[in-house]
Amino acid sequence: MLRLRHVLALCFAALLTLVLATASTVSRAAVPPVADFVPPLSPAQAESLVAEAQAAQRQVLLPVRQQQAVDPGMLPFAPTFYFPQTGHHLSNRSGFLNFWRANGQVLLFGYPITEEFVERGRIVQYFERARFEFHPGGAGQPAGVRLGLLGRELTEGRSDESFASLSAEQAVGQFFPETGQALSGEFLRFWERRGGLEAFGFPISQELDEEGRTVQYFERARFVYNPDDMPAFYRSMEQANGIPLYALYEVQLSDIGRQVAALRGIDTSPVPAITGAVDWSPARWKRHIEVDLTAQWLTAYEGDLPVYRAPVATGRDGFNTPVGNYAIYQKYQMQTMTGSMGGETWNVPNVPWVMYVVGGVAIHGTYWHNNFGTGIRMSHGCINVGMDDARWLWEWADIGTTVTVRQ
Image (cartoon, rainbow, N blue to C red; front, side, top):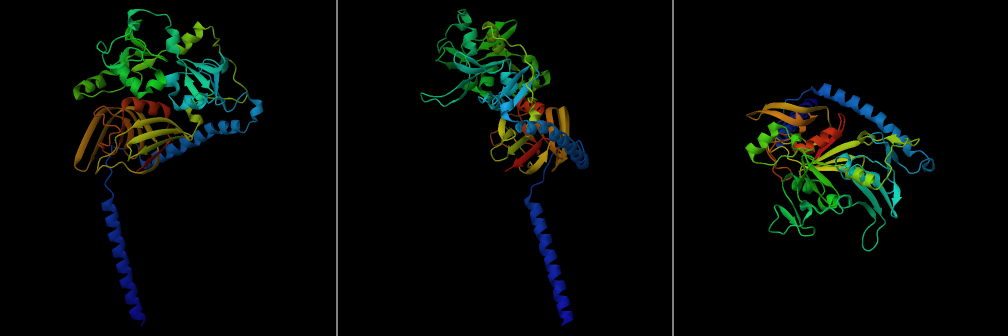
């Protein structure tokens, strides 16, 4: 009887081993291989760097937590952050801080150059490139932050030919009958990608030359073309591949906020930091990047607030981008990336704004296609983004910034 039980136990164990082995084989077969570039560090080195960076990040977050515990009566408004770059504060008393963080930050608005104050019966604050206005709502309009019409104020009274209205037949590019002006080329692409009508308003001039630069005025902004921001290599790739490429600072916004403030005699002198206010930095919030493989979009967060979104192109079938929770462990401004897997070998020079998140899988700028957000997955596992988006993310994120990739 004991021998029979022993034989049955051995048979059961063998059967269980066979089932588990088969299940493991099926599981491995069901998960496509992940092809990527050669990782710059070993897993142990990457883990060590991330742990060290995240420990440092916790120390940066500590003053913000302490500030939030301060009696609001001790501060004129809370939370309050100080910008040593210009010597002024920014807060959420009127929603200006979160509006600034969520809608372009330094890229579109620059730094604050005044404190909040009441101008013409409205709470406002001037920035290098904008004026924030708090509108209490009414007449069908919700309460909230809006951008002042600085372009119109700065150009009031100009009657030179560049400000003359065009007809639809005269216009080159997209015509706006509301102002009789048109948009084309790099300015049109920047306008569409960075906020459009809500951020900049309608164009109010044609392109013109000022101080040796091509510029164009809008209701809320002045665009300046800076072609030198696109290195010659990428310009040649743009022409060779017949696709538009975007450099982050190829179109810049001028300091229209400073100019209007000067015209109005507004004092922009720095002020001392309020006791308890913390110097601003993106690192003051827990930063996180989420990549949605189904939508083919990436979202960057500061705490719970989305501050940047970008279309992506991820790994094609057989080279699928791995799903999971990771962290940036290495960064390069530019790198020649090599790899070999699945019968393919590749060597890609001058890949810009590279951030490795797991093994050889990186978020990086891409100049050989522009199929971002289209659903066309064509990488070898990496997360491809446009060059301008890659640079923004590279400048914003640090080693240790967490990255979640989900279906």
